[in-house]
Length: 436
Image 1: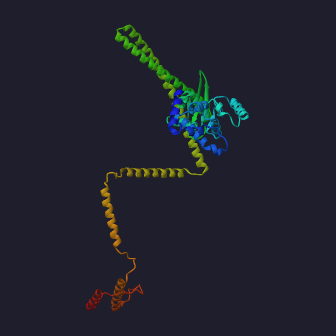
Image 2 (image 1 turned 90 degrees about the vertical axis):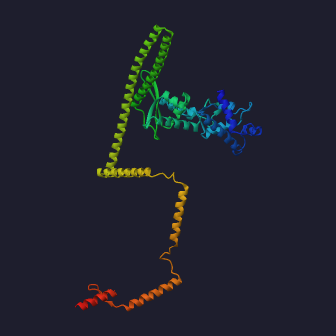
Image 3 (image 1 turned 180 degrees about the vertical axis):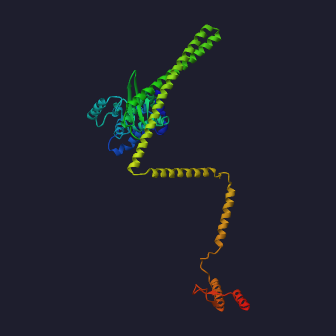
C-alpha cells in the first residue's frame, strides 16, 4: 500500500507542475465558502485529479481516508475542502458507494428488503468520507466493458456462462468482481448462477451483445456445473503433470547417484501418475464433448427459430416462394459481380513504381493537346466582319451559278421536287436522242 501511495504522489508531482508552490497550495487546500462560482475552479481541479489518478492506476475501489491522508498529504497538511469535493462528486454521479449497488448473490427477498431500507434510511447528503470504499463510476463502466470484450474474443454466442473464479480472475480480484457483478446485474446484462450438488458452485451468465438477458434456465445451471467440472479436471491435470515431472527428476538424480532401488521407486510413481493422468484426461474429453453437443444443439435451435421467424414474415407479408428465390438470385448475382470487381481491382497494376518525371511529361503532353484544341475555332463562334464579307460574296456567286442552270421537274410520284441538271446528265440525254 505504501508503494502505491508513493507512486501516486510521484504521479501528482508530474501531472501538477505547481503542486509544491506554497501560495497555490494554500488556495487549493482551504475549505469552500461563499458562492459556488468562487470555488468552482478549485472543485473541478480536485475532481479531475481524483478521477485521473484512479484511471491511471486502475483503482476501481478507493478509500476516501486514503485519498485525503495519503494521496494529497503535503507535510502533514491535507485538503480541508476534500470532504465537500467528495460529496459533490457523489451527488453528480462521479463516484458511487457499494451499498448503492444491489448484490445479486443475495436472495430476492433480501434484495427487496435492502432496497426498501436504503430508500428509508438514505441521507440526502451521505458522509462519503466515512465510507470504507467508494467507486469511480467512469472506471466501473470501462471495467465492465473490458470484461465483455475479453469474453467476446473466446465466445461466439450472444451470451456465455463462466464460473465465479474465472470471473474474478478476469476482473482482477474478488472485491473488484463483486462490484462489477453488482453493476452489470443492475444493467440487466449479467445474472448470478449457483448450483447445489456435491459442491456449491457459483457462476455468472453474461450477455455479450447489447441486449439484456432473458432469464436463467435449468440448462444454464447444468452448463455451469459442467464448466466447473472441466476447470477442476484441468487443475488436476496440471497437478499431475507437476508431480510426474518431480518424480522424473528424482528418478534421474537417483540413477546418477547409483541408487537404483530408489530410482525404481520413483519410476513406479511415474507409472501411477501416468495412469491417473490418462483417466483424468479421458473424463475431461467426455465432459468437453457433452459441452460441444449442447453448444451445437443451441446453434441448431437458433437456426430453427430464425427459419420459423422468416417463414412467418413471408406468410404475413404474402410473399411467394418464387419472389424469395428471385431475391436470393439477385443478391447472389450482386455478390458475384462485386467479387469480380474486387478481383479486377486486385489485378490492377500498382502505380507506386511510376516516377514523378514520367507523370510530369505525360501532364505536359496533355496540356499541349488541350492548347492545340483551344486554337481550333468552333463552328458556333460569331463570324468577323472580313469573314462575313467573304461569305456573302461566295453566297452571291453560288446564287448566280444556280440561276444559270436549267431546272427540270422531279420524277413521277414526287411532285414539287426539282433537281439540278448537271452537265453529265445533259450529255447523256443528247446521246440518247442521237441513238434514237
